[in-house]
Length: 243
Image (cartoon, rainbow, N blue to C red; front, side, top):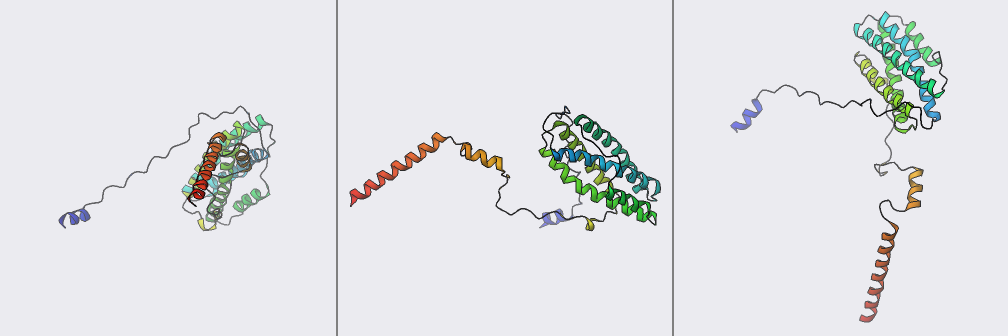
């Protein structure tokens, strides 16, 4: 009993430090422009450019007009980082012959106008934070899809770089403390259970049909079937002899 009381009354030690999280290395990825370039790859490169075309002026506007020092700093950081990402994107587009836009699209121009027409600095802050946080959340899974599936090495590296920029920007925006999480889109419903841990596509099914069961040779399968046939014959003969 005394030991239990001593344990319960013992002072709580300092909180454990965060476990270090690995950061993807920048080695091993090439930018030779080799590999098939898909329509999705081209669309991704264009969207990276479009992101910079409105987030750079949005960040600058927040830096200049916000009365919240944290929001102003977030705006400056995002604008400056998008200038860097924009240069990376333009280089890949030039290498791969992808035409890029030079102006924001209609939706993006509308978001910039929301900031320009904000009645108060606080309203500008909210529009800036919420619009950019929603946009980053939308592009985040799209970047992951390109990073995982592209056959082109330059697009692969750009996707990895863009992913790190987007993660940084989402964290910066959330550091403002005014993100309206309730207004963000919810995640799609999970896939039905029983599908297995590995997705099966048409290529995998075709390979299975052509090659049989992975990891088991045809000879082994035939030997097993022959053994089963012999065992069945022997069992049948014993039954008839007993009768």
